Length: 310
Length: 310
Image (cartoon, rainbow over all chains, first blue to last red):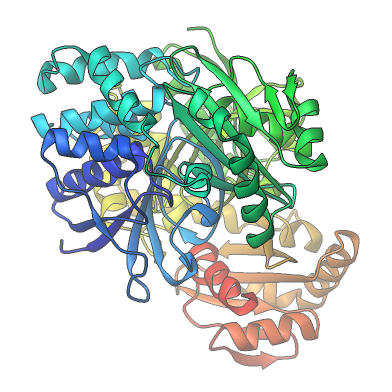
């Protein structure tokens, strides 16, 4: 069985997208397939810290493949979040944990669960197929779970994710998971090198709600003051993004990981109406809303916008 | 864990839709959930024969559920093929083997594989979860596989489906699978009670190809002459369906199971252009085309129409 398949995480890759491309590559290799993990963009600082700490190389950056290449999407399923010209390729597999928005011409393999991290879904697939989880893979899986759950703080966290992380640590042997997660989050929070535009688009996903194109950037940080201090630069960057991408709306949310609260940056009337109607929000100052204990784009932001635009 | 979830096969249920609702009910019950299998329409004669032969009761007919009911879709994933007002319910699970066309507001559990039958997908889930496959469940699984593969004749058949059917027969103990499948197909082919309208819509699914609404009916039969003899009645029934359902196109294909060939009934210019462009077809007489060894809607008809309308 010689199947050359590329394993692809989403654009603006976060830690889960990167580690799951590496994990899925090991998974399919153990099943006897020839596969190549790739990434669609630069690593964020958290992922950079993790891979450096673990001594593991990042998947190759590759934003175009040969026509009709076989692909496996990990950690996403929407065309807009995937490789450009997705229709040129054959989607063979999807492994994910997000809401679904997908049209295919032929049947394919999908494994999706509403767990906190794609790494948790992959863990179950290893167990079901009786595959070996090496120390390296166990570490990558834990990092995916810690990153997506914000060390089990996010409301996306299930008891299963926690059990999986603890079971994996029997193999991985991290001495103190919480301390390690703090190092990850601190690495991610160091945005001193970045322009406001880069900050807005660092963890950034496009959505379509009932025909409206809305992009949502999230900054998960242990230092939310950083974003508030450069508010006018962030608003300017959002304005440019909205214009250049032809968006109906744009939202940027600074998530205070340690205190579990979200602050939303809104641009114009469109975003202000959206935030005021969709969330029980408190206006802090012009273009800035306290949206309470909102830390998860997937569980707390996107479903509310789905309802708002329905 | 007391979760009340309904398990739903598609509209115009075929054998796989019915047996998989029953199988999935057993699966989730073994996992400790409270579930109820239902069906959205009358049994076809094949399914009726099978359930009577096995002494198993059909799922309850139920076309409306309480608001916000939890549901599991088996053997389909498209809104148009599912329960009316699907948006009123919470899709918790999808177990399927078709092309995907789905939008959800929140993450969910999906298990899809490009195997020939949803019963094969469910078999793998039993094995992975180390659940017991009773004699009754093994028989239902085999019937799902035999029906969807037309006794391993359909090009959707994989070596995995065959292996699964043979492994299951160690439990089920059918003496002669091929002879039993012939009884199934003969039962399905007895259409003497049905009107032309009922024949067109017996195994009938709506599709949307690039905005065009096209319904496709398939008659799998050991006696294709039956349909050819009532051609004018079938065309009249197709005309009524197209008008009443506001369709862009309608297609009816008589599939000769034993000789593995398809005969397409076309209504007007729209369907004739579609059949002539999408298939290497031979006109037999007005509104009737020999489309060669086409037996599978999923693998041989729908993908070609996807390409034609793309």
